[in-house]
Amino acid sequence: MPQSGPTAVVPITAGSSSIGVLVAVWGVAEADVASRVIDPLADFAQQVGIALLASRAQRDRATVLLLEDRERIARDMHDLVIQRLFATGLSLQVAGRLTEHPMVREGLANVVRHAQADSARVALSLRPTVQVQIEDDGVGIGAVTRRSGPANLRDQAVARSGRCDVTALVPRGTRISWSVPAP
Image (cartoon, rainbow, N blue to C red; front, side, top):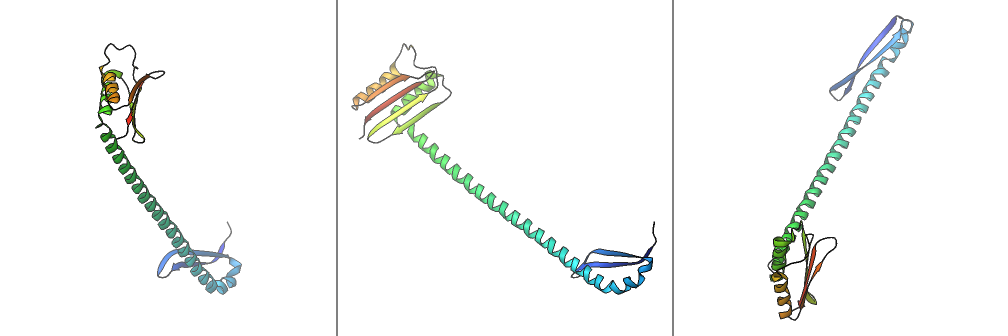
């Protein structure tokens, strides 16, 4: 291993904080060079300190921007969730009001009692006629011995100068379409 000559250990500072050291080692024959560059080496160490401090500040700014973006995204997501919950609440209120309509109540009661359905869908239109359509994915209308439910729905429609049709869906299910003139 070659012999080392003069060695300089210069602190790397930023303001009053020491953030490292700069070590320079010269060969044995370069003692005169070492004595001439010690002041420029100290200036260089100070510039390195400033550069490191600027780099840390830039990294910190990037971190702050990232955190601000995450916070903004979280607020936006919160607002979106609140809007969707509000819309869902309104939809549930409308659905609740639909069941207040006698025809809807009767049709859904038939689905619950007889259809063995996994789901049912209700559509209501008020203009130019009152139209209610209920579809389910149940066993279908099939051969029914008692038709009081569909008969009641037809009677209600006819009494209001309207009509009621009960249709079997393929591959399974039933559609009840009920319409009367709008009041």
